[in-house]
Amino acid sequence: MQSSSERMRFTFSKRLNEKRPAGTSVKPEEPPIPRFDLGQRGETLAIEHLERAGYRIVVGNFRVPIGRNTRGVLVDAEIDVVAYDGATLCFVEVRTRASDEFAAPQTNVDLRKRRQIARAGRAYRRMLGLMGEAYRYDVVTVVLPGTEKEIDAAPRIEILKNFWTDAGLRKRNWQDTRWD
Image (tube, rainbow, N blue to C red):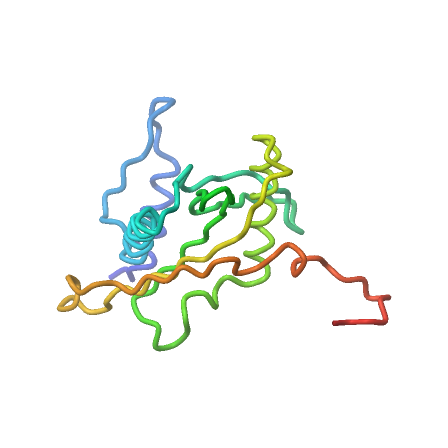
C-alpha cells in the first residue's frame, strides 16, 4: 500500500503532465487545506474590521515582483491590504492564527517579511506617483477560535498601527564601528 505522500506526489506529477487547452486552469479535486481557509477568513475579517475603523480599502493582495533571491529565482512580494487611514496610505499585513498560546500572530512579521512589504510598498508608491505622500506599515492580527465548537465565537482582531518604519530596515555595513 502506498503512503499518502507517495499518492500526493503521483497526483501532483500527473497534474503537471496533463494536456489541457491553453488558457484553462487545473481545478483542485481536493478541498483547500484548512490553514489556507484560516488565512482567507482572517483577511476577510480584517478588511471588515478596517472598514469599521474608518480605513478606506484601496486594494487587497497587491502583488509585485521585487527581485531575485540568491539562487536567481524571481521573488514576488504581496501586500495583503492597501488602504487609507485619513490622508495616510497604509500597507497592511494580516496575520491570522487559530490560537495565540504559542506566540502572538505579529511575531511572524520578521525582518525578511518587513523588507519584502517595504519594497512592494515602494513599488506601489512609484507606480502611482505617491512617493511624496505620507505612508505607514500596519499589522492586523486575527486570532480565530481553534476548535470546531468555538467556530461561531467572536474572533479577536487588533490593529497595530505603524508597526515598523523604513529606518529599521536598512542594512548596516560591517565596517561601521557604531551599532545602535
